[in-house]
Image 1 (tube, helix red, strand yellow):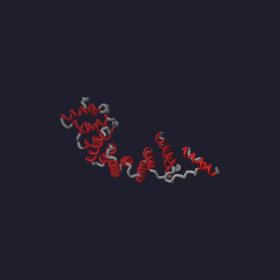
Image 2 (spheres, helix red, strand yellow):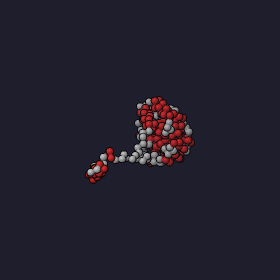
Image 3 (tube, helix red, strand yellow):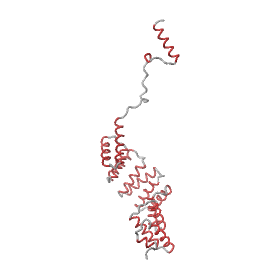
Image 4 (tube, helix red, strand yellow):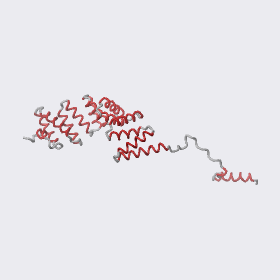
Length: 268
């Protein structure tokens, strides 16, 4: 048998036997198409992700100055990224740089317009800055993007209330509580609306509900409850009896209040 014949025979036996052809006798496999080949790791993207993770660690540990310096450095080097602006806004807000925080949220939203949480955060910041119309606009957009958020609706209601749009505020507070009856700020807001409308019985119920849900029993809330119950007491016998009941309950939260003790009938 010639040399060529022996080679053909070996190939035939290998194929029929299912063991394949020896690598020395095969062509090297063709490279996969470019669109199917695994992408090489992007060194810059990997470094950027590591920086964000490190910044998250700093924020979690309360090292806000370190987080801010890291994020500002990353921003200076690029790339422009909405996640970076979101973290910067958080750091600026927590360190009292509210104007810088507003700018950071606005930069984030310029990159990703449909971001309801960022719009909500921006709206709350504008509310703190007493920029009521701007705050209302952003909070309204957040609610439109996420209408089932009780928290978003409660803060939109606050903006309406502070702008003296009491009917709109009441409507949003009520809708927020329909979505989540445990939102303390919605109960407080609805109480304030009732107080403005001189529905002192309704205001008292909402204030006590908020306190029962954990509202902070601070001086402002104490004054609002005292004023509400003192006004209710002047509305006639039935209202005075209700005021006495409410005042007795309120004394659990404000035991030093002379006004509440008087309304509750505990002072001579």
